[in-house]
Image (cartoon, rainbow, N blue to C red; front, side):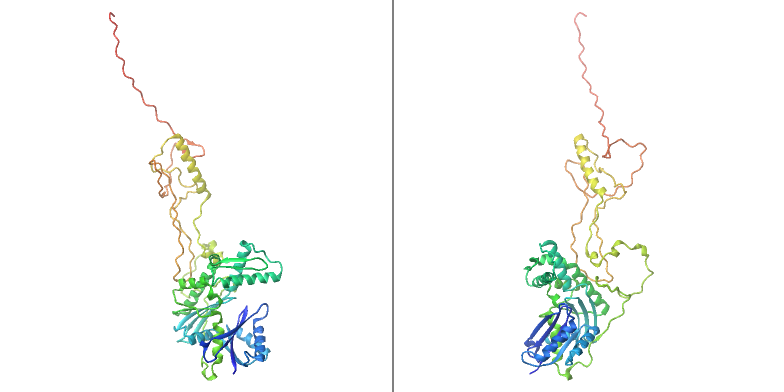
Amino acid sequence: MSSVLGVTVGESAVRIVRPVDRTAPSAGFQFQVVETGKDDPARLAASTLGALFQAGVAGDPIETVGLVYRDQAQAERLRAALSAEKLDHFTLVSEPEAALTYLQATGELGSNTAVFYDLGDAGLTVTVVDLRAGQVLAERTDSIGGRVFDKAIREHALDTNGVWRPDDPSTDNELSAQCRQAKEKLSESDTVAVPGAAGVVFLSRDTFDPLISQCVESSAQFVHNVIARSNRNPEAVVLLGGGAHVPLVQEVLRSWLKLPLVVPHEPELVLAKGGAIVAARPPSSQPISPLTRIVPPRPAPVSEDTDRIPVVKAAVSSPPPEKAAEKTDDDAKPWWAALSWRGPSVSGKQISGAGLAGSALAVVAVIGIALSAGNSVFGAPADGRGTSPTQSFDQPTTSSTRPRPAPAVSPSTVTPTTTTESPTTTYEPRPVPPPPSPEPTPEPQIPGLNIPVPTLPPLPTIELPRLPELRVPGL
């Protein structure tokens, strides 16, 4: 009996699966993972398949291979590499077709329109699939992926955990493998410890999530933009690739997109399994017209720099351009800076004013003079600006309307004002005082405190009782 294989070729690994029963996908699959290292992925896949064609699998010869490709450029590279190995028993299967074939065979996808969120080691591919129309819209970015997560863990370990920076390639590669293992183990445990030559990498989920949260949230924005460009209303989100195991990815997508999530068993092998199912079909049962990939034109060219996730804006009739001088410093910041909330700034004058206020109250207590009720010790700052009692935040803006998760809002900070109206001190917002009217003759003030010199009230007049008139007898 012959065997069929399904193969995916990634930047970090070549995955090969074999159905236990080619006529019943539910019977299970056998799989093998070949790390690419520094080898060319296409050539490594071709040489591995060449060896398998010669030796067979489990004693069975290989009949054909379903080779899954991401785009036409990768398909051409795979075709050339297989031709160099003189291999021609293969079928090229697109990623959307492979995913749909497996999900429909297992019954895990019951919707006609879905979004595939394929988070692999080297990047993220988002595909909107419309089964009725037989069309797909796919976008890809390498600003998020397993390598980005591994790098964040590595930098955290070097900065905080006593892991020393490797000084030779072997130890450096081992540290990278430690970080990757820590990431994978966190999918099943809350705390992990991975030993190695450079030290022990300690990591908890509470530490890992903040390291990647901004990147994951940006990927959710990327998904939202792809959906908007497709002009479709998807009914579910299917998580594929090894990144589907990360709990934070599932939480963020569920919160941002408000759509049901489908996480298949072994999501990193779904495409290879689908390729094997397609290859196992008789030629007569192959689909007559494959899915059509439609990529709408972008409204403006986007930089090829892959350090940021592209934000796609819908084409609308634009008003006259705004003045270029209105740009702020936020426009030049990287994409992750827009996700950080910024609190109100406190000027040096406000800090020094608080110290002077304390000194002024001490002087008033010593002198024993009560200030009039409702008058504050100090007026507006020297720059003429008052302090608002309401805390404001600068929020990032997006190009399209979408539901966002409610950010954590800290209690608004109210600037207290101390009055001496009664023996107890009350705190209430201080309104911005109006500009003081000029006085012809300012009162003398205590140097450095800006407080009028206190004056003692005049002494009261003491009236003595009149003495009785003394009369001397005989005078």
